[in-house]
Amino acid sequence: MPIVVNLDVMMAKRKMSLNELSEKVNLTLANLSILKTGKAKAIRFSTLDAICKALNCQPGDILEFVEKK
Image (cartoon, one colour):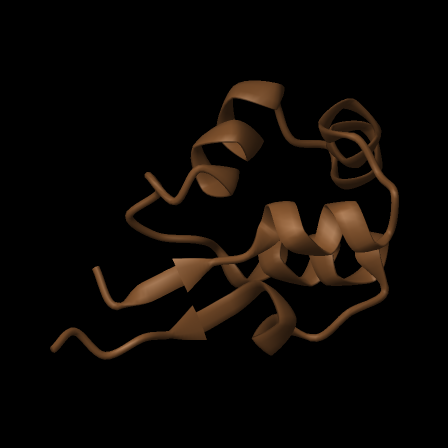
């Protein structure tokens, strides 16, 4: 998929664990893990909003379009 999820990068920059983010955005560890590993097929805007608020970042910091060659 040409959309890359950089959630792990932003979490590392903010020194935030998956458990801490899970509590802040009120999402299960399993769902956050699926998103973090890039296995998610979709993300709700409300979830993206909550993650961006918790990590103090923009959606473009988490989602990246990488064209396949």
